[in-house]
Figure (spheres, rainbow, N blue to C red):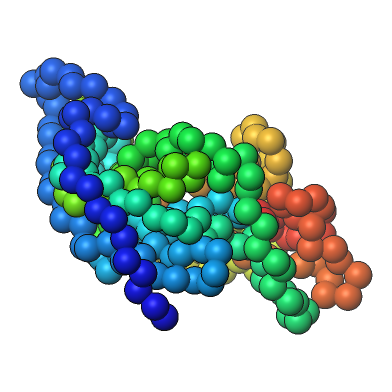
Length: 299
């Protein structure tokens, strides 16, 4: 693969250019964390006679949307205490350079579905609304989202904050790249007013299954309880009556959330599968299957 020559111009970008969020005062119950990132040197490689490929050695992912420029990104995940509130994220890019390129950045290919059927990769078609635009792509230096789950060690529940940093931004109509050589990420959050989960859980395990399996599973429940694992059985029929939701998988989800927050449940056992491997249909629609499942599934 050939490395092509490029024209580099150093520029000074005012702090705050393309940064989401402004400064804010920290209250007494607010915790703040700051980390600094260093971006590895930019690599611009010839892909073919029309496109170039953009790489960074220390990027761990790519911004890939079909037909849009494929650009490297750096993903950072932070673990905060479970139940924290008012999470705010700021990212300040530093030491920004301008790179002039003569070819367009290679567009991301369309995603192919996971299937056993042999498929041929479709021709890459670029999104002209992006490539003929003189605005930056992506439109900002970073995005972030939050969620809850287990810690990396798997020993406790935490709040995850995932930051997608886009160190390379592309101006297609101008043939120009903005590259941040450094960045500073600042995260702040408020501590929860109370413990979001019980200190001492009433139960360790909940088994979710249809009523048809209840009698047989009761023996398992008794066995677990006799060995010090506090267990109870909840039937799908009971859940559907007691919990609302857009569909049956969502009702199951809300029950599990309630079981964790109310009884401190640590483990969930789902019992059930397709009612028949010959005539049963796995999907009711594009999002879920319920009718022919003992336990509904989400797609």
